Image (cartoon, rainbow, N blue to C red; front, side):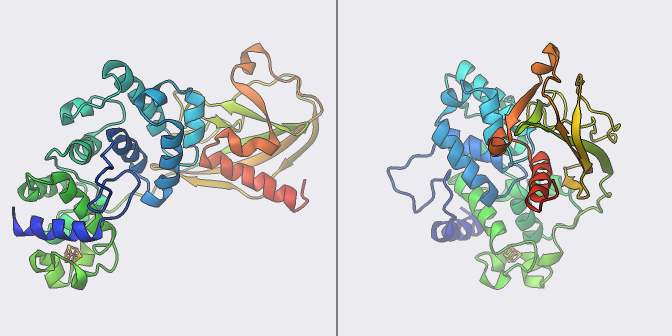
Length: 363
Ligand code: SF4
């Protein structure tokens, strides 16, 4: 084993983060690695921080302790439990993947990286991470923390994302045959602590003597990033339609953004265009008691665009506004239970604007 691997593994043995899905060097010998936990945590951790994931992971594993339990759960319950974690395509793939693993693999994840990559929601990184962490395979696990450590260690100055090819080659040179999973997790932990984005603490680092930029004092300039284009700004409208202490929610089209989630009705905005100002659902015989446009805008940032929504509140005189077809897509939801509707963050922000204004007596 190389000196680098020995130093990193010794660091891991003393400093591994205690995470609910991980069996670390200080875990009880009776605790065994659970591939379902590794898979679930890795899907949740895509684009999301450890601290944000932990409560969701704990709730999911308490309600659905294995692939078979998750596979038979209702889509709506899973989507509602996922609400607030963002990137909802992950939740839809999570459901598909659990059903395939349950049905085609009898509830046990395949161990091979290529086989894992065929499952919904599992790309190169996640396949490598599962193979490595759950099954101890030698795999090239590359997340943002590892990329940062490697570019600093070897002074790779090609901007990301182009640098990924060099990073992968450098990683392939240093991943040991033994304890490959611990090695990857040691690099991740180093990147999440001492080798931080700003102000890396090179003087405390276990691999300082081997690190080029650490020794040169230039680590904070790595990784070099390509200049990002500004995100486009989209705009649209959302409606709070209320009658008798209930609010009208719609189930978003499966193929749209936030597909399958409950939401306030809106005007059809998406990543490529603004909303057209007209309600996406057809309502009949709307008799309005009160209508108001809220001053506060709902502002939200997605991966590829930002969105500003104007919120309009409407109070109706009667609730007979849904024809038979619309009753399949929309539901009157008790306002006091709105927290249980599983609204994605964007619409939860709209609800907050509405409830804050109610509290201020603007209603
Ligand atoms: S010496 Fe500094 S830059 Fe190099 S790996 Fe350690 S913390 Fe990161």
